[in-house]
Image 1 (tube, rainbow, N blue to C red):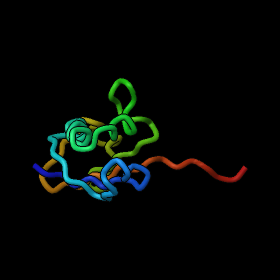
Image 2: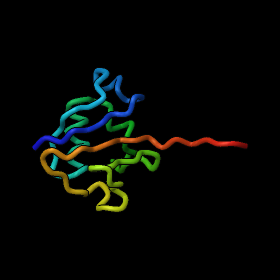
Image 3: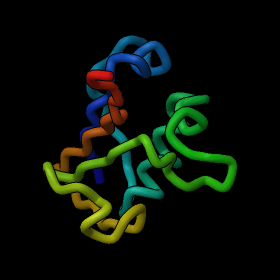
Image 4: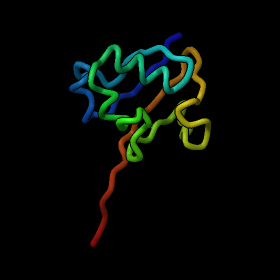
Length: 93
């Protein structure tokens, strides 16, 4: 089962400058494991020491925020598109 993952620009150096990669996994957790297997070091940027997604990392499956689905247990199927989007902070003082 192949899932397309969009990689944010700051992490593309870990994916040989690829903006999109193909990984396998029945859910987001498994997808992250395969992503790490293919691109060592990327999971450390996305997950904390306990393996949970960092709070400033947003993940969308087919444009749906996984926080409103089943979190990291959100099921994936062949052809799904996953977007990893780092949160951006800022604004006026």
